[in-house]
Image 1: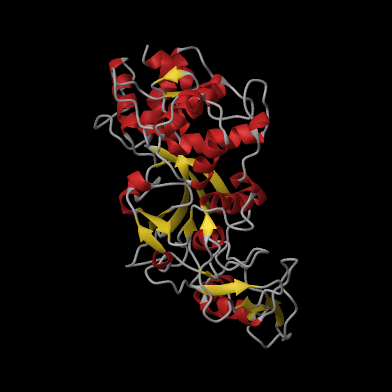
Image 2 (image 1 turned 135 degrees about the vertical axis):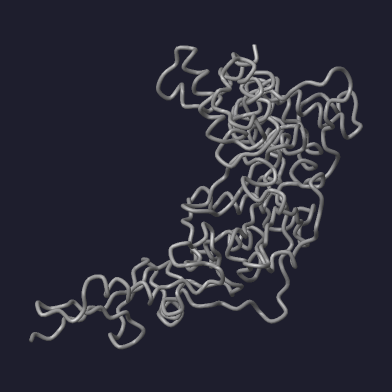
Length: 432
């Protein structure tokens, strides 16, 4: 009988079983992302390859492997890992992958709203991959709570159960860029717990906002229905205690007024885009038909004018061109927001130049909002409601998608133009 052949298998980087987690702690971190060599007798998983006479059958070997890696998380069975698991509270990790404890008595640093958003954007731009065990080059863990810890510049990697201790509860009406929406499932933290950074409302209806979040496969920025795609009622708004409206040393250039030459007819630069985004976050989104962009337009002037008028300014102080005072209030989150239209008949939001169309973010899997109900009822009125078994409702479902697809095909559209998701032209024709 031949001796069995043994092979050492390094654990998967994201495996959360106790043995693999121990291995990740005791082994040095490899900057290149490769598992370093290690002694065969220390923390390795040994697999015996059966010889012709066979000591183990294939089924028994598979069962043994499953047992070794059975999930240790409470309430989570093998093969049912949550979509966004998170690591525990932990120190930052230095360049060598070893914990780097903050100095004794270290306090969370003061930070401006602009800096929070800019820090979040660095991970989105880099498409930092999601992981509950890996650490990015800045020392922060690559999961949702590590992302917020990084954006807030906290001295440690926190988790959803501890982030609230660094913040104050606020209301939906008080939300400003840099605040967070947090859902912590205290009964089973690994099931559904998640946190996102609020980046500003997408329009004046305040039914959707720009979310910065760390979620598989990587960090992203996405228009999101309030408060989130799922478990919406369980998300609570919080404001970081260290957020400041003053311009601190080392603050990003966005807090500095770029000069009058950056705005006005003919201007085409990133400062115009940044101005538009800040104005949308302060309630001026109704002036933009297709969203802020780098080319100065009448929409930018009218939105700026509305913000200036909201401060009580008149005359040349409310001419629609941002001066240093206007920019400072926008960049630091100070001043009054643009009020929703009150006089005259109520007007529906407009997106892509189509009145009433709320944007594609309202019609995605998991979306739940009044626009889905309105869409479904109109499909029924137009004779495309045959796919509904219980009637239209606020949660987007396959019946909605198939109804929209049928309507689109009735227009003679095919392929991607008839995918079942309502765009601005679908909306215009459906409600005409």
